[in-house]
Image 1 (cartoon, rainbow, N blue to C red):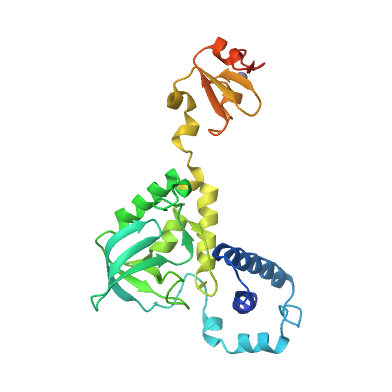
Image 2 (image 1 turned 60 degrees about the vertical axis):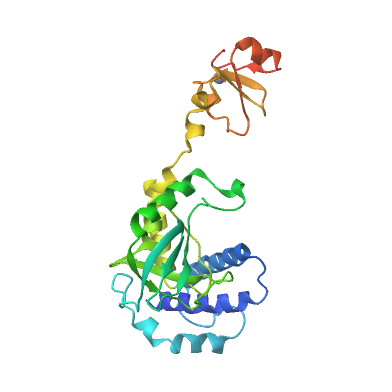
Length: 280
Ligand SMILES: [Zn+2]
């Protein structure tokens, strides 16, 4: 418990000191995550002392711990205090981690779910959209479209795009956490909005270990290359070897490097050499 409080205090401290010179959104994110892991490991071994102070000032860090009696009183993650929620009606699901809601005062707002990131599905740069993005988006649509939800805010109310930042509750279920624990989203934290980062990280670990959602997903074209291109032979544009499409080595060729041939002659004419395992 003491270690946890120290970690949280240091985490907040790190976020503050890093935020000054942060450039890109993602760079900031990575720095925060690394700092979090590093501090967590460090404070496992060392109890208190001045050792756990990160950089700036020992006094400041100690004050941070003392001034947070509420955090210290938290017994464990499974008995959270009831969050203060703002009721909202989901008018539209934009993608897996972004929704549009109408609030009690009649205003309509875009809401970005805090702490999670689903694969892109509606990005203007289409090269960033991946097949799993549509699956994650459908999951959010199924669960949230037309529903009344509760919004809980963290330290910052809005992101740089003006979207509200919130934890979205469907009854007792926090949907942000559900996305991660079902494998539809990755943990993506932006200090100082890190209230539930430990729950998210645990959920992601369990989902990955169980191969849930995106962690067990293989895009269709990679699992069945012979069907997508219709050729009987597959070659690698990197190695200039070709195989029967059911050869295990042929199946390892990524879709970027795959070249298909209707006949053996066609492959050899194109300068490809037959695989010595499947002997096409
Ligand atoms: Zn082969």
